[in-house]
Length: 472
Ligand code: LLP
Image (cartoon, rainbow, N blue to C red; front, side, top):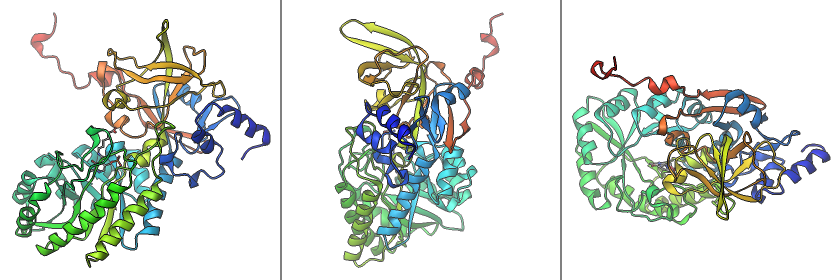
């Protein structure tokens, strides 16, 4: 807490922001808040200049130093989320557990290194994510390789590095049998649990009509086949039902289904000891979102697995979970600089920023909603509806329709979009040949570059111009 003067300044600055944000910004002990239930990073403050401060760094000053657009990652929020997961498993699950960061949410050396230093394993879905995790120092035994169409090279890399492979289908099983050597390859089998959940259809995976995992009708055949392969050692089962889920019931149901399948696997003599329940816990993108806390999610998952396994007379498995979004989503904001504006009389005002769908493809892909602030005038009432447009040649490149911002937006204002940590950088593209932004990690007033801004030279690096196409 600051002086009474600072406190009233903070309170007035946040008067126009959603209540949840106020609670976070004025919190005595941010570590008590579940990061996935916050719109802002836990260290977000307003400073004496009326600027947004994250991790003790003035976001406006960060843009001056590192340019824009800029991803600003708050280390405290990411570490707090990791700790909430680990501590909750310790509290609610009597057996062994491992939290595995789903690095598809944001894979880069610094993020993997932070998650690893908090004791998390790593879920990877490609050779690219795998080598990033390895280079960040993650123990290969705690790296789990996913994917519905892994290449032979990816499988070989996983085997040579000693990673766990989560086998998705018959083709992959057969490929692994062909690759097998003297040492049995440790694998987990991914099964489609047939559990529905309410989220965007593109990010649902647990229903039967999914491209991922073995169909439950085939379980006997799969278990029998695997049990006869001396080169494979099936150490566990895996399922993931979807992403950005607010319901707890599907996760509870999953424990029951998986316990039944463990019984079946044991019947075929498979040495299954690990159960992965995937990820999926949602976060707040707007004040209308109300996800359960990390602790509540873990409590349901752990209790359901414990109860279901005990009811079947099974020993408790090593319980793996694979959160991505709920670890890193709220830890990052993206700072843009406002450029042009267009007023369409009686319809809307477009405010254009210097990024858009290439650094955040979620609005155009999933119609995702976001919230924004003007970081250099935080106490100005954020009450005027405007539409925030990206700079790409596409009418759908709109980051936020009807965002509430201060009345007079000026070119040069720093606009911050909240909760951009998950599936933003990792899904970024060079559409329109726009270089990807830089990213910094902030902590206690220090900002460190973790991703260098791409340059125009980077864009041309892979281009080759055949001799016959060169103009003379
Ligand atoms: N495990 C598996 C096998 C997954 O497929 C996923 C996400 C996760 C774990 C992590 O789920 P999370 O805890 O992040 O919900 N691009 C989409 C999300 C795709 C999720 C893909 N799989 C988006 O931007 O919403």
